[in-house]
Length: 180
Image 1: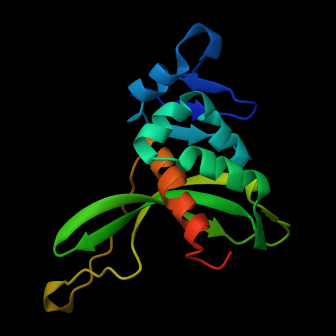
Image 2: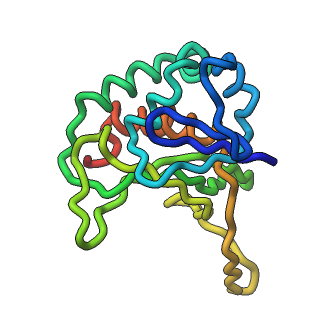
C-alpha cells in the first residue's frame, strides 16, 4: 500500500508523488486515504500537522465534534509549563474485561541532552512511533508465571493521527489530565 507523507510547508506526497492541492478535492483525497500508512517529515511541528487538516476541518468537525478549532486555538496560544522535545503519536494496547483494543494516543517527550525543547505547543516537533505498549493500568495474566516478551509494532494511519490529535491531545489540553 502506498504511504502518505506529510511534509513541512503544507506539502503532501502519496506513493512518492507530490499531491497538488489545487488539482484534487483535498478533503475527498484525505477521506479516501484515512487508512493509509503515514510518515512525517523530520522536524515537522504540531502546528504544521494540525494545519495540514485545515481543508478538511468540516470532516474533522463532523467526526471529532468541535475539536479542530479548539485544538488550533490551543496550539496558537498555549504555552506549556515545561519544555518538551517532541510530541509522540503512537498506539497503546488497552485491555478491558478481556477485550483488547489498540488506541492512538499522544505523549509529550522530554528534550534529549543538548536539545532545548519548546514550551510553545505549536512549535513542538511531532514524531511517530510504531511500537505498541500497554496502557498504564493494563496487565497480561500469564500462566505459570512465564513472561512472554515480543516487540510489537503497528502501522500509524492518517485516521490514527487525527484521533491522536483531535481526541487524545485535545482532551489532555482541555482537561489538564497531565501536568504540562
